[in-house]
Image (cartoon, rainbow, N blue to C red; front, side):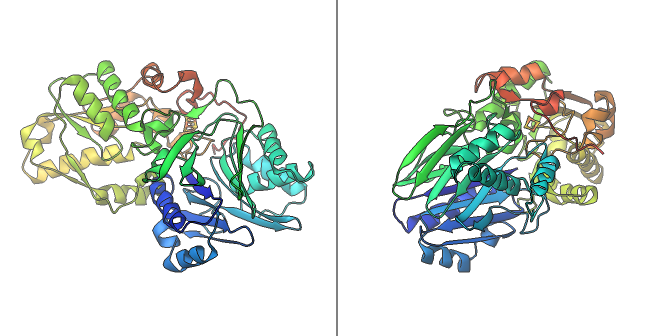
Length: 474
Ligand code: SF4
């Protein structure tokens, strides 16, 4: 999963550099492994990409260079590696200088036939620098353009007609910006205005600045072309797929709660609160204190508590300087980090004898299992008998049964707890009193407030994938 961002402006405005950096910070939750940027002032381009957060990669030296160039087009990407390593070569944007010009591209999403696409490109003589989707997308666009007299719009159309998968992307030359979204619309993408500039970003939270205004979502199959003269054109280059397949995990887990994605009116936080309400209606626990798993379960816990008339209490205190465990490779590291990340408010264990612990999803169950054992350890240390306390686990999404081929790095099935064990076994392994998930029907009830449920991808819950894919199962 990644975040893309950028702008195209008819004239240089010194405020653009600050705005661009702010966009990157506001999309940091979508990817923390790499940041990269390409920019142009119409005559010359520059670029950088590296491992690390926006604050680590967009250094003072690079900001000074950026400002000195006075770029009127810039694209950037915060990356969470799902294809290719975390080295700078695999990071995005990718760029190429050909005889007829300079091109740079960044995407958000994955290609489910990535290896086949790479094999096809290599068979055509392409030299791949990375195994990353964004490089495949750039090369396919350029092949499509070459076969159509250099027309990049035709190149993007060729990409969309021949490449199943998730790609909300941006492509730039020295003088023109192209913003595009795959025909299924798996990943969110918004555009808008900042003063005279056209701006775009994966989520609307990147427009949280006084002079920025959201226009709307980029439509599936649409390309928006903007150039340095201020001209902006909209092209529906391929018909959007019906139904679309917007990733339901964006509102469940990935997007920032203050973002609007897939809906121009309501923030994701509303979706999560409603999921919690629905979860209580389906799986009530009366007379309990509701405990959010910070921060992922917070909104659903509030919804659960409101619906049940229950108190919300903070049992887990999270150290904000430890990164999201889901994005750390390696089981041992993940377990260590959960213990480092959370501490327990022991006094609550004297106040209540029944708790409902709410989280947005259960992937491997590592975090939940360790949290419950940490509570029991903390209770024992404080002389409290934890066998007298009930811990009910409520999950605000259905059991995850399959991996994602469209840009979220869910593990392969053998690592997904719900794909391998019954609810009873998982409950026992976690050490909980009960465990219940939101049903798929319940999720659809919540989703319909945002869009028709059919317009969402549910493949990791159902195993029914909307496109061809090459299995990652080993
Ligand atoms: Fe989202 Fe799951 Fe579909 Fe992947 S498979 S796009 S995570 S709903």
